[in-house]
Length: 133
Length: 380
Picture (cartoon, rainbow over the protein chains, first blue to last red):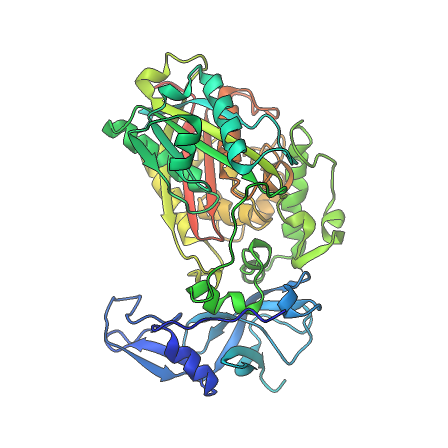
């Protein structure tokens, strides 16, 4: 079964183009300096339209997760984590954790992570791996 | 709203609950609606306001033969019916209509005439959550729990206690789907769904429906059953994306909705005799007890384990058995409301003796929305 993939919109195109280029791109407000996610052409804190796209560090920590024991067919047969990570810049995003066993013992909350990109043709999905893992 | 200006005069669930393969979703709406109308001695022609979620109020009105002067299609998930009660109270007070029918029906298990669609891949959920393998509530609603447990130095056993104690309530309810006693060990040994959640920490998936009839408190005295007055109401919404919940340790929507309802009702927590907190998963009563102000952050698990919410405890919670053991069709809020009304009428299978005030708190989506209704059986 084909992997469920995003269809970028004009407001999110820069994010997915960034992933394809190996960059995690966030937006921040020029007026209040708040970084935010998911992408939109205004600041969700102060409402300003003066926002810019920038390359984020790709550093994150594991904020919370579950391990799905009944995976969706496109995700394979083995149990896998569906996680939310907190980026070093502040915003959180949903993702998968790669490069380590999908077990409670290996997936420890607050462990340091870094972004990597999974190639799915037109789309590259940002996923995270343990630092030094 | 102004307290006790509006009352529930009719309330009923579908004739059957559980597995109903011979009825469609809209058929369940209608069965519940006709039962609720019979409960208050009305017919569809007496109804001039219709609210529903899951189906369109247009479809429900035409199906039942109602020509309303007011309709509400608020659809924010399982707490939609709490919001319908709140909006209906405002509409009745404003004179937009006089007698409101709120319906719910869902073929959650049998999927007869059911609606469901995957999010569009260009929606924000389709772009930023679906690609990672989310399959619905069991794999998304559950994600905040590990963070909550770590923050408060709690364990998976604390989640299991929620299921164990709610099963004690279900054992008293002949209509509950699951009535056999369970232990913490049973809950932990159940099939793993989405670690740390086993099947017994997840709600049932069943078929059923329910309906309410509301009118002004002044008129309510003329109906066959004693009125159940709406004392206070609250609602809020937070985020459709679980990953963007403001903080995984609490629900902002719960806090806003609960505080509004308590302020409107003009009551304190000590006044509350009976409590319903929508429990799609075992962590929700923990969040609810804390975010509604019954417990300090991190103290709800101990409060439950010490049997404060169990039969004989000082704050009876989810006395029908809840979504974990009574029934859960998908949008459970209607069943929580039904149990609050039964308790206020003195007709619940596990009746709380002398209960005068019931708080009924619902969640919509996955921490996406909240609605809180406070009922009283004491006349204004």
